[in-house]
Image (tube, rainbow, N blue to C red):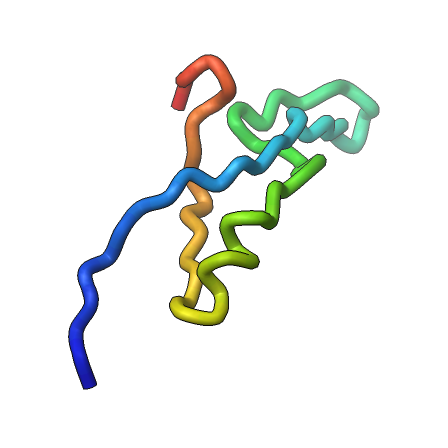
Length: 66
């Protein structure tokens, strides 16, 4: 078995802020929590025959905010 060097690739996942309300119906700000709207799977399709994709659950916003 050979050891291969890990490489990072940019995967485009678009999300929108999650909306939540408490028991009284008041909105609750969950911070940087969101719902996935779209995943560009082209990179996953290219590498899946050769590697096991690992997707980080933490990311930056479109403007670079993390």
